[in-house]
Length: 355
Image (cartoon, rainbow, N blue to C red; front, side, top):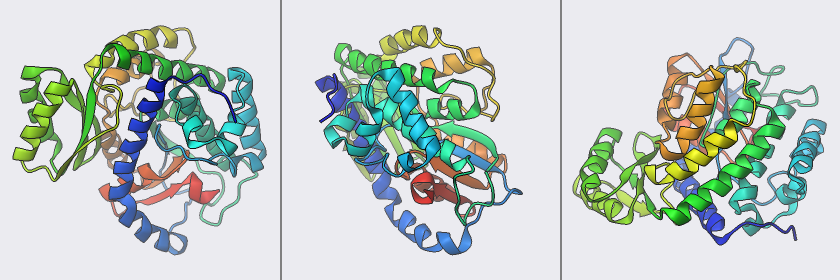
């Protein structure tokens, strides 16, 4: 078995992220089944379309997620670079690692980044062939969910892959340490719109820290903060008509002010590396808008740890810009399900299905 140095806290953090993805996946399952049946007959990417590359976040990992990728030269080379940089056999982990090994935050984040970039490089290469894609896709925009932002920045040419691998490994460590210092909880609120949830959190803030952490879709928002404040928010949400309030298996209040200590540490790490202006327009999680200045990109990545993830706004921005085709890179297809729920008129693919 691959040996890792992950702490119990990092393992629980990864379990929280995995559960968050499962909540998303349950809601998307019926839509995904429907679209998978019609995909082969109706969907084909052409040069005339505006295409977006979106990248999966932590929680999308699964055992064996790298097996298909290493059969392609660009995939094999990507795994080798990651393994050399981290002095860890990422290829073995992604192909043969157990769920427990994959769930240790300090290896999960670089593992998902590696799989995402391997898939991206394969689909952009001459080795790739699929009847649903005519030639190599040219992307008009890119974004990633949480840690997926680093994959998006590598794909855009803003960040070197080897540097990104080092950053996300340290990011995972910092988040786990912050969770020990400032404990908290997270809950997925189902069935209320964003403004109502935001108002509820503002009211509950009278007893402690709580805020929306992830705006995943119009009717699914995760809140994060101190236990007493989150419990107050749950009471208010149920009174307001929430369908469900699902506690997440979490070791800390991620994407909330309780992560500011991690934000500070990550900002120092980010400033040790070089970023450039993206070649592919990049949309940030924190603002839901385009960011191209390298200094602003660094600040957005740091702020993300303690700020709400505006994923719905990111997708709305792309739709408003005329993006008609989305390719999700990385393990799983949760993001594909979310965009299908927002628009029935777009074409959506995942690298897991295309490779």
